[in-house]
Image: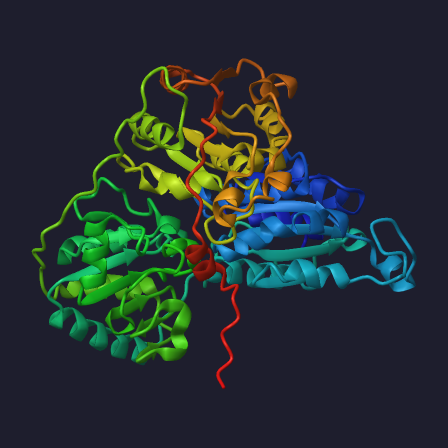
Length: 570
């Protein structure tokens, strides 16, 4: 290159070419060159997080709305603090680029003991740990920066998973060598189809659809991750195929769509939805639904493998669940999901005219002056949600109940259903609010989860986002009580510290926030109406009735956790 742009500056600038406008992180001495490159890049706002874990959660939420995100941390202590959040993005297919500043090569080659190390002169062991949460990783040098940035970005976008970019402090300040690609469009950022595999896959799919009489589709969240939701909608509309989602895939297609059936959750589904899905002669899995325990009514789904046809981002699988491909009848790869949907839509093989029972909205329950229950809260939230709202729901009791809400037009729903790290929702909602400032973000969390990451409320105030935060307050890890059943000892460890939650925003410097504490259904309705009308952030502490969701019984616990050893046959 003819100018003196450094390795750190080049890496940051190339990532800005993705259209990302915010970088989350915590500064550190080994990462100062990266921090400076971000600060002096006019394309970015450097969002200083309360800690690295919260930064990774915020990046996760940002990527869900924007398509990709960036986090930066320092060596060792910083990157490992972010590891849990990065693992969540890996599990849920979100491209988050992790920039890590590490000690200079002079230090590492001399094996000099330094802070943020184990004092043994060993370097590099943390790289492997951070890379384990990523689909691609690199250590940048002046010579490889240009080519490696192209590889890292394309791999992360093709796989829709995190990527690690590590830069030594001395290399970070050295000029890049080679011909710059800054400002040029990215190529090879979508999966590709092998022509003969695509042709064979299409023949099989066309045959399956032609023979079907009552098909149904299950919608997976990867349609959204790969930006092919509109293609899927067009396909479903052209064929008249009704669709349902699991709780982890909720809201990927607008729930106001006339073909929408509701949430399929195994035996915990509404009976009409369960019958429709399980009696279908063809179940089209669009996106690659993962039938894990919490996504399938604690593994109670009863869909015949022979009826399954999965169209995932890079494969077509016939006769097996996406995560059980060892038993498939037919398997085609590589075939790009976008190609499949386009070609099938154009073919227009047949039009189904199936009777569809639309899901009903949750009823309003509870007298005005009665204490608030999970059920009465869900009904009030259902009543208050508006089109285009963005709803973030924390892992825990709320995530068991709120999938039943029928979302208004283009209202989207996010829950970290698979990874399930409590505390995720508060920073993730903050990241989403920065990614989509023109839309209203609503976040529902339990108090136990909120205590994990509530310090990000202060960061929300600093960057002037305007979410509506609803904290369900019952002074207990309610989800643990539910999952553990009637255990007489769990009260000894499931009780949590009692906080005055409604005072948190003021204590953390949030200016002009609308804060309240509510204890009855009437107070809740009034506070929620005010929050939606208020042109600013709102924080509502919702004191719940002490009666919890009825816990799992012993048979359900045994089925879920497989605790009993099989009997020995003689």
